[in-house]
Image 1 (cartoon, rainbow over the protein chains, first blue to last red):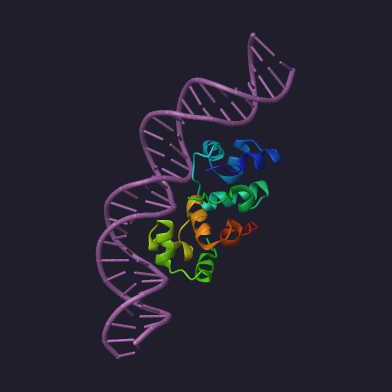
Image 2 (cartoon, rainbow over the protein chains, first blue to last red):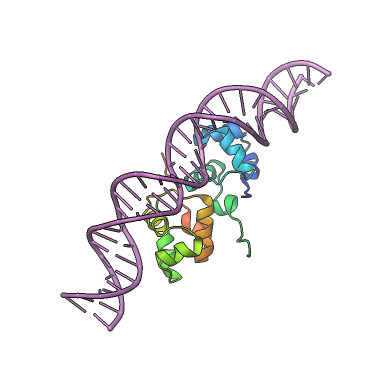
Length: 67
Length: 67
DNA sequence: GAATTATGTAATATATATGTTACAATTAGT
DNA sequence: ACTAATTGTAACATATATATTACATAATTC
């Protein structure tokens, strides 16, 4: 599940640790989401968006795979 | 967790059951998401969006509560 | 208004998102 | 190169998203 969390995070100069603390989540969770190995919850996606000043579409939208 | 799933679903003339089947999920899951009692997974949010031809922001975005 | 269809919801079970702890690997600063 | 900071990741524990089954209510249709 690819996303743009890392890009958005670095653009607001936050480390994984800092973002995690802002959101109230673990650094590992942020790391795994950035690596596309987690399928995060909507609430967590929203919290990430709020923390990096972006919207869901900007950070988490991916086009449907045609199949 | 309020959202616009029900609006988007009815606009494409799908019943909860039909939407659930399209996505490969249970009708109850759709019902509870629409009632705001579930905190769905990103993948499920995306699948719903694909099924109703909307984007994440259109269906699931909510402004940050100021606190 | 009875019958069918659509929706709400509860109890319990299962799958999976996230936490915890720990350590390795990578990057940045000196 | 050494050190510190940042990030990747593994094993296991816990919380919670979703499934299953079942039944109740509301809305349509005849």
